[in-house]
Length: 245
Image 1 (spheres, rainbow, N blue to C red):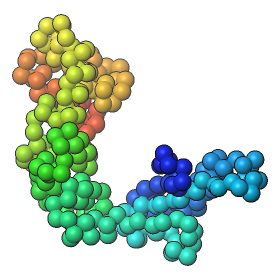
Image 2: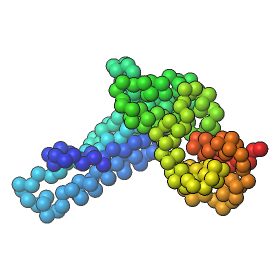
Image 3: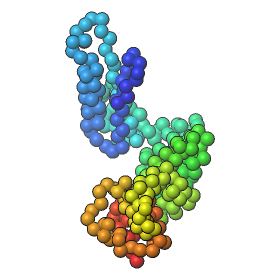
Image 4: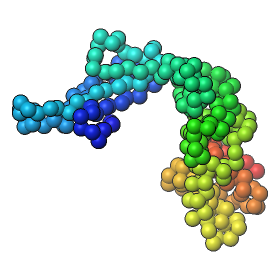
């Protein structure tokens, strides 16, 4: 829901639909009507001089195949097809970082996404349109598309992926890990940092994780586990690495 400060401008409801659902237009229009009623109380609507606050609705589909009904149904709802917008953007503004960021969201062929991953990632890292903070944010979001893959596969696709400590997300995780591991000695501090990474990413850890982690020893081994904790796609992936000798 977007509410402009200027009351003369309509409020907007945005819905993003990336799978087929017959109810998407119905529930979006219902949300629009309910929001209109909330913004325009009955007592005000009864005044002849009252100007209602308008509410518009937009549904962003990844592609046209997900549109449940044609434009004649629910004419108050604007439709946007993301794949078509990105194609136009890539044609009109070559090198636009939004294309590199959002392309993996609309491309359903994993091989195509993965073959262009390094190119898109490099475009985000070097885009003159993004400052350093935005570059870090965009590249972090981009890598999230591949979080079902293990860290080795991600690095194979994106060979210039920086060390975790150089990324925005990595620095945040490191800070949280250090808070838990500080003043506990080298190995105890490493274990505390690993546990901090995991808790920051996956919430409260199941019983037995800390005990299993306590059996791991050696600065190099713990350093490797620390990196895995920051990059792994799931807690199960980390536990598999932890149980390897």
